[in-house]
Length: 214
Image 1 (tube, rainbow, N blue to C red):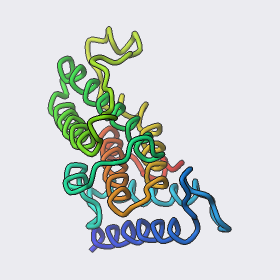
Image 2 (image 1 turned 30 degrees about the vertical axis):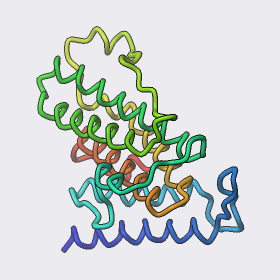
Image 3 (image 1 turned 90 degrees about the vertical axis):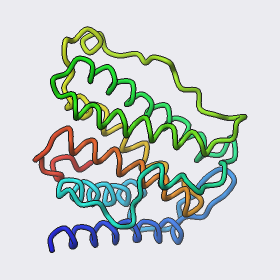
């Protein structure tokens, strides 16, 4: 019963944000322009992130959210140079960065299984996202990433290291949700946001989602 209630609340938050985006924003070739609204963009996305964090803490996947591979499966290639595709390019690079960090950490950590799950999800997500780009503007993913000296030389890396990056990733995917111009793009952004929130929850199980509210 509790999980069903959580799922309903998250669905309401997502639908409400989608309706607000459609009614409170007018789109132009340069992106989105805010119309009159009592809440700011940041406040609306904060409500969405809060709802997703509560859902992740209760281990409940909202019924209207799919995985990144599912969300990208039937999407037409993006146009090069749009606000959404440019932001998604950065998200792909960061997703591949999580893949890189997870691979490195899994080779050193005693918590091998957690890192293996995260690495697989990040690798699969980055690969799926790359497929929505035309060949002429494919994301350029680095072979290796720059890491702090303490992490690079550490004997073991804790899964909680993800918490150091989760806020930046959540902000990035929240902005992608705002920039989305189609329902398919919104589904991709929501899938990516949900994936990062799930990583955050797994990095600190049992932590109150309210302590992480932006």
